[in-house]
Amino acid sequence: MREKKYRFNPETLTYEIEESAFFRNFIRFFLPKFLTALVLGILFFYAFSTFVKSPDDFLADEKNSDIKLKFELLNKELDYTVNALAVLQHRDDDVYRMIFQAEPVSDSKRKAGFGGNTRPKIYENIENADLLNNTIKKTDILSKVMLIQSESYNEIFDLVKNTEKLASCIPAIQPIALDDLTRFGSSFGLRFHPILKIWRMHEGIDLTAPRGTEIHAAGDGIVFKAANTHGGYGNVVKINHGFGYITVYAHMSKILVRPGQHVKRGDVIGLVGNTGLSEAPHLHYEVRINGRPVNPINFYYEDLTDEEYYAMIEASSKAETHIFE
View 1 (spheres, rainbow, N blue to C red):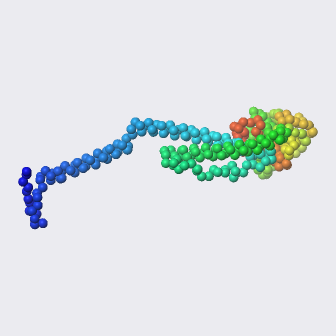
View 2 (view 1 turned 30 degrees about the horizontal axis):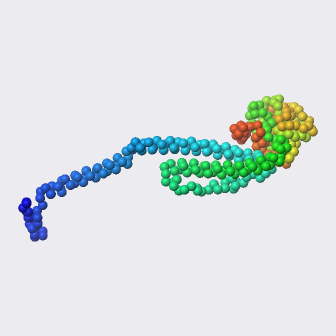
């Protein structure tokens, strides 16, 4: 057994056991290095496990990227479907219900239940939560819109069953074939008249086509006027379609029908011209319901696809050269 050594401590005035040189060296040199190495090892392990991905992590990231891409594609398809439904809603409210003299579906009904998110909050705590919640919201809205639109069409169908005659009389086609049109002139609404130099209501639309192009009756009816007015309309034909509908076809070069004549939808009633208050060959076309002028473009649903219909609306709205009455 090693003999203990004592050392006098002048501060305490007592003898104290003297520590061995090995213990002093351990405390002074080895222990700090050991603790430093231990801390560095722990930090390295944490950094490696946190920032260096394992093969499983790479596989999971690849799957997540694939899922995210599929959700983005699904969102684009949903956007396309929502836009297609908007087309149906427009025709439902502005065309079909106007034709059958039914009240349009109210905005409050169409937008009922669209507020808030009824999905569990678990979707807020997962990866790509915003994308998932956005997709869920769109599908919810889409399902509600489709349900409301389906109910609306059921109402329209009931009206159609009792109004077969009305359906054939409605001015539902374009009076000049789409292939024969060269461009749009003035559209429906307030316009500056290029000849009279005043602002006035333009109660129809102007369809530009070569002189002599055939003009067709937009619906079944009886011609009640076919003459040269010696005024703004020039050679004009007016057809009474019944149910409050009247159509007007002006500036013809030649009239091919007579007053009292029954016409069917699509019959040729005249040829495009430049008579009356006009600067170039075109057809001025009006639709009136119970004496009130309405935009004829809303009735082109019989012979146009959705793409053609909306291309025509866009072209009409962009028409800036108003050279006709």
